[in-house]
Image (cartoon, rainbow, N blue to C red; front, top):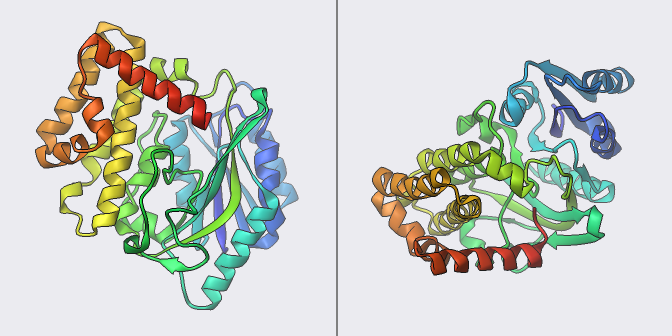
Length: 339
């Protein structure tokens, strides 16, 4: 069994996928790199993946699928993975090689000690290359370092501290046990990927190293604000799936529940802000429909979300209230350099 499987979903990624793949190869035979070509048509993504497979047999595996979107590519990567641990690396991002080696050494040490954690966490870095800005998201104030811990040992997550796909490595079997299957032809499923398994997580390990480099700024990038507004239906779909996948009021672990309430509130805030920024009658109606959906689906869970500061703010319906929402969001964008 490989130590780590890394799935790299690729769609017309020829211009930058080399960097993602090369950043994994430092681990040699301990890593399994699964390049998933999601039906690319505009370039030679598949040929590049096959060339790496031929050059690194037993390490790189290239899998072709009909276009199914990012979520289906992750599903395909997981279905082809054999590693003890599983991580997703987007094709325009990369790993810091020194950090990856440190993480792998720790995973090996844990395995040698007959300790397998459900979730391994490391820092990630927003790389806004066009502005020569780097913003590191660390968890040093909230997670115990260099030790196995449980939810009860965690502190208070600050607004910008979310456990994202970029920061998490899951035990592969845990993803199978929680029946994780991401929807086809849907962007923003990384939020569901990192959220749905959390109630199954009992043991964690945090290493304060800047592993994942998250590229921000390409005009055609899915997190470009204009593109997100254009794909509002998909943002809403993921948001509703997050509401559906777990009844937070039934979670016995209070710290896990508190974090998941925070994360669901954050995603619902992003959806709300994008609808307000769009300003179309359709999107404004969909914004209200989202909150009505949460309320009708699970009133106690709606009350949990509404009990948070941002949950309350998101209920503002007047024009001054909506302007305030946008001001808060703009300030967060400036501080944390996302989108």
